[in-house]
Length: 273
Image (tube, rainbow, N blue to C red):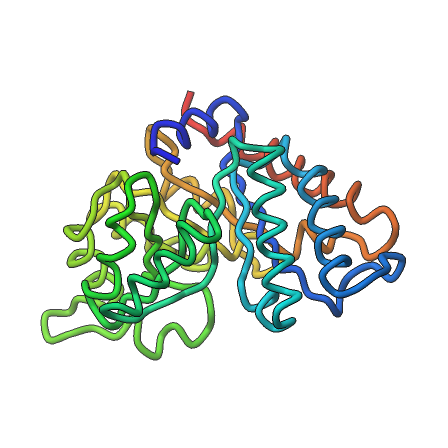
C-alpha cells in the first residue's frame, strides 16, 4: 500500500487505529471449537468483521502463530488472505521484529512480502543497514524500524546516551532515515514514551510512527496525538488486548467492536481538520 492510500483511508474513516491480532490460543472463548487453526481463524475472522469499520490496519504478532507450529502459520496465512479478500483497504503489518543480514534478510523479505503478502514488517535495526535494505527493495511495502519501545527494559539500550549526549534511539532514527524515505519507512515509538515524540518529530518530521502501548499498557492517546500528529496524521496507534479480549464470552466480537469504535471516535476528534 502506498503512503497516499494509507493517508486517504485514515481521513476517510476518521481513524488511525491499528488492531493487534495477538491471538493467544489460551485466551480464546471456550465456545469456539475445532483444531487450533480452526479456533484461531474463527476468532480472527469475527474480530476482523467486527472492527474493520473502525480501523485502518491490522497487526498480527507472529509469536502467537508460530508457537502453534504449522497449524499456527496456516492460521496466519488464512487470516491475511481473509483480510485481503474482504477488506482490501486495510494495511497489514507483520509484527515479526526480524533483524538479520545478507541472504537471510532477503529471504525474510520474500517471506513477508511475497509468500504472505503483508504490507509491512517490523524490524530490529541492531545489525545496521544490511538488515533493512532487502525489505526496502520491495516497492509499495514498508519497513517499520524499532526505535523507542514501550517495555520497561527499553532503557537498557535505547535511551543510553553517547559522549555527545545523544540517546541510542535518536541515533538509530537519524541514521536509518537515509536508508529509505517517508514513503517506505516507519518507526516504532511506544505510547508510554509520548514525551519523546517531540524530539523524534524534529528528526523524522514526515515519517509515519507505529505507536503501541495505548490501552492495556497505559499510554495516552491524547499525548501521542499532541506530540506526534502531523498534517497527514503520520500515526498508526495500535491496541491489541484492550480490543480483542474486551470479552471472553460469546459476545467477544461485539465487545471488540465497541472498544474499537470508542477509540476511533476519540481519534476522529484528534485528526487535523
